[in-house]
Amino acid sequence: MPDFTVVIPARNEAAYLPLTLRALERQTQPPAAVIVVDNASHDGTAQVARAWGACVVACEVRGIARARQAGLDAARTPWVASTDADSLPSPEWLARLGHAATQSPGRVALYGPMRFCGVSRPVVTLSELGYGTFLRACEVAGRPNLAGANMAFSRQAAVLAGGYPDVEAYEDVLLGQALGRLGEVAYVPGALVETSARRLEGGWLPFLWRHALNLSGHTRGYFGD
Image (cartoon, rainbow, N blue to C red):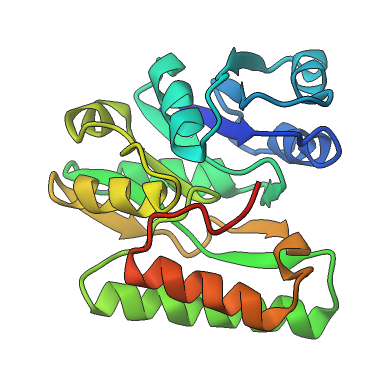
C-alpha cells in the first residue's frame, strides 16, 4: 500500500491537537510522516506537535487554504491524507484509504464518512446519517464533496491540479473538484473520522446555514477563527 503523509492545519489548537495525534498513534497502517502546520498560533500548538514528534511547518499568513498548501508543499510521500486538529481518525483510517488507493490505477483522491464525537449517542447517529446523506446527494449530482477533515489524494495529482486555491473557505472541495477532472475520486465507507462538535456551540441553525453556504460554493471564511 502507498505511504501517506498526514497533514494537520492548526491554529490555536493546543487543547484539541493531542487527541488527534493519539488517534494517529493507533493507526493499523502508521503514517510515514505527520505534518502539523502551525497557522500563526499564539498558544502551545507548535510545542505540542513537536513534543509528540510531528514535523512542524510554520505558516505565518493566516488562512486555512494557505496552511493546507504549506503542508502539501512539505509532504514527500506519494499520497497525502488530510485531517483537522479537532478530529479523530478511526484506527483503520489509513489502512482503508491505502487499500482503496490501490484498487484502481486512475484513482487520484479519496474521502470518507464523518460524525460528531463527545455528544449524546442520538446526536452522533444523526450526524453520521445526515452527513452520509449529504455526501450521497453530492455524489449523485456529480459533485463529490471532499472535506479537509477526511480526504486523501495523490500528491503528484494535487500538484498538477494547482494545489489548494487561495480562498478563505471551500478550498478542500475545490481541490477535490479539480482532482476529479484529472482522475477518479472514490468514497471509502470504512475510512471514518470523528470530529469535534464545537461547531454546534452556536446551535444547529447557524451550523446548518454555514453548510448551506458550503453547498452553494461560498468561499468566505464562514467557519470562524
